[in-house]
Length: 341
Image 1 (tube, rainbow, N blue to C red):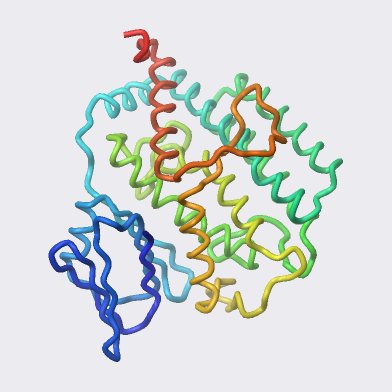
Image 2: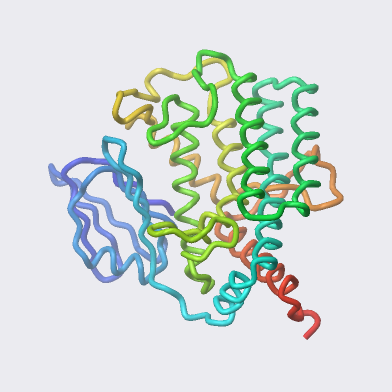
């Protein structure tokens, strides 16, 4: 269950495992913390510190979105896990440049393969022409073939960035001009599509953050994104694999003809934002999507145009990809896999 707090003059309290949202006028809402999978807060409600402790202890990711302005979102989660072996392996890989580069290339490969998913939505829902789609896939496949020759993480990011630019360029050429989408922009987003992508990536990041902490990975030590002050680079690494699911969700959510003007608002400092009236629908569909999140890409050897795309819970998929990452790190480090031990 997702709890969205989107009203002014609310107070959040914790009482014996229950999160209570008390609003001005006497209305209130109760949500057992054990049933919560994500909490999304807009604006600045008052909250007891016991609320954040209880949510962190239960491992419930909390996303705090600004009510206005260009400030970024804040993600709260539980403390560091104590599963040492995986973290030790992560630090061992990071200390060996060639091994870190190999794992980073694996991450980029998974992301690039994932473009098959939103490409289907762009084609089937928005009418992207077959020739343009085929040209993009060819460019994507050429990029995948170039990954083994990349000499650094920066080179890998350059390969990925070229494909991303081609992808957003294809979206811009396909969507009707009334959407105002000319490419990816953020902080703040300047059109409805970018507003949806930014919000979706933020919500996704909170889910990945929870999985990274729970698994024992060091969130600050990335193998693709280099460590930097204030940046959780490993969370960014793993989020790359799932971005295609957000793209697919946004392209499936928007109307092929034109945006409903009541769904968005625009202010110079804040950019384009989803309106308060549209948020319940967005989060309702997001909650359903979390439960049946489409797999980022077909497994190697399966055709990209398969009709029945596998799906599963987002949290379960994140846990599964962390296990795949563990296996890849073991392979690169020359450690035996579980089935070999």
